[in-house]
Image (cartoon, rainbow, N blue to C red; front, side):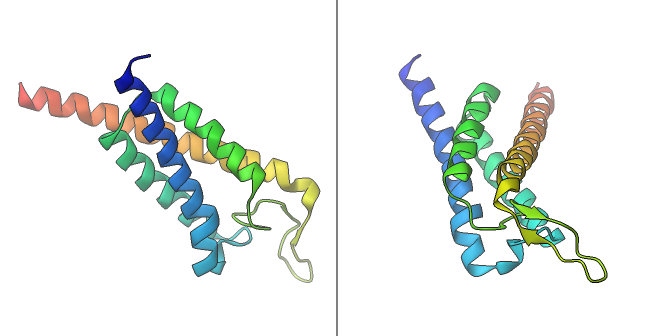
Length: 142
């Protein structure tokens, strides 16, 4: 692997590290609506993922294999630390008349898997859009 490829891979992994820090360390401190399974939590997760991924793919690299490797690092980081109940991780039950959701540590890994699948899906979607836009721009330039 050449020096340029290693640098691109490092920058992609760094982008996923920034995504993790933003989603699981900074945002839960300033916006407590990401704790639980609310619509706000999913919106924050999706918006931050799309913005950071799009910026990373445009500036650093749009190689999908790098982003898939970055997703593994992201999953490892979430497994090592995620605030209790952030983005619905570990939340069990529903909030209906008299019933309340609660944190259940045994549901944590399932929640982590769901978040990683959602983030990976969004990154794949952004990758498709970036590739498509490059093709369209290439055709417009010719």
